[in-house]
Amino acid sequence: MRALNQQLRASEQQLKAANQQLGAKEQALKSKMTDLEHFNRLMVGRELRMVELKEEVNTLLEKLGQPGKYEATEKMKTRDEGRRTRDDSSLVPAKRSSIVHCFSGGTEPALTSS
Image 1 (cartoon, one colour):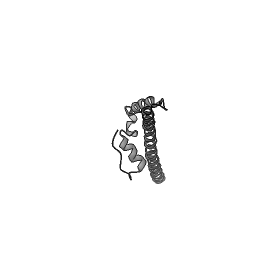
Image 2: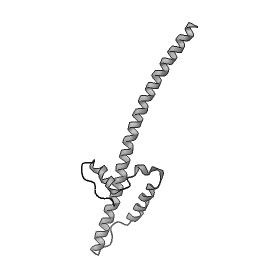
Image 3: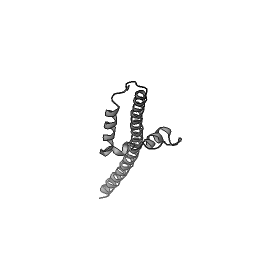
Image 4: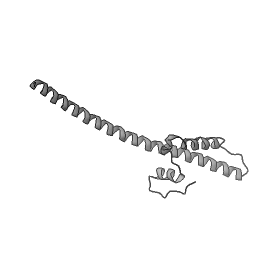
């Protein structure tokens, strides 16, 4: 009986140690996931800003009587807007001011929403 109690205590200690290791690994994974979500927001924001800039270039060229330089801006805009309606919309900034905020690290004033 005494041997069984010792085995039980040893097993409980092993289980505690395993749970502590699991908790530490879970925290590390959560931290990595947070970093990846932040990086994703930055990259999506960058792409949305690129579409805006291409549209602006096309508009300015049209005002000068020249053909637009970028043909795919409307397709890209439609694609990106479609992403906002999916379940991952929390990872896509909904407003341009959010995008600017991401790029500036919060140190520059955000532009108005588009």
